[in-house]
Image (cartoon, rainbow, N blue to C red; front, side, top):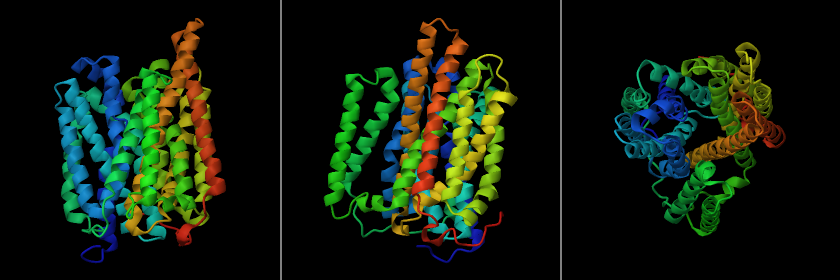
Length: 481
């Protein structure tokens, strides 16, 4: 609920603030990867400890998304967004000023909590700002670009900042951005009240958060501990048990954290399955293609970042106008299926890239172009589908669910694909192959599996998503502003 009816200009200004806050969060999922070697030498990390500079963020981000979404519904979306921005910004300062390994890892975990709150709340606030129709489609297109492009922009920005300054700058750059978002949020975001009549399902919150934390920890630590080790199996078993307890709690309590009836809504269920599969494919693109270019083709950090620019530009063009026009004309199903099919083709092309004499124009650019087209087309409809079947009172929860699907799919997919790539690389090395050939063989297998994930998501979206939910695609075609 707001103090007054917002004008069109006020709504779009508020939307811009939400995008600025969210892109800061999305960038942090990839910006750190280019700087890891520098961080390792600066703070004296070994290989095992260095992994947790990334994993600490993934662990808390994936674990707290659902809780963040529901807290926003209960206590007010604007309030939770501000809290998330403050926590993320302060944690970024702690990362940039870290003098020890422990301080950096703890600060990264705090960043993940703040990022989870911001990500869960931003999408639901956008859905509250824009009613069904062309404006919502266009807004979701822009927001889709922020999510799709942020990861690849992070690779470019990480290489640029690390090269010009040092690794601390990739975290300290969040301070002026976070301060600006906080200032603008206080002035531009509409005030609202949460549904104070509801009670927070404490037992449900504890069990699902603990289950997600255990699951993400098992995934991100599986390569080191061994996927079939007692430690990993115990963690996965514990996560499953806690999930079952959570389901029992949600089916019996009066005010559940996650009303299980939500999953009877076809678009919510299907879009979350698509989100898991697609995130696995996207993380394969962001991380494994960067490794291929760096370790096989010999690119430097800045060159790797620049290689993502064509995809970024295409995603920008589609998300700014073309994707919204496609959704308004064809609905959500066909653009989603076509976009995911393009992404699958791009990953398949990466799987064919050679170990020797690889060319950017022949072996990298075509795949990047297809992936840019695919991401630009598909993010808008998948987000619309995920949020289309719920009312405003559950928008924060639905946002948290779809974000959790993406984060868990990305974490799980990256861990599994990286494990497959490592196993195949080691096999080729044991057979006497050279390092570039062995690495390429491993990456090719991972890209192929990622292509299968994206292709499967395309088929599910094309066959199972309910077309034109609530008439949102019935409106006149949107025009870019």
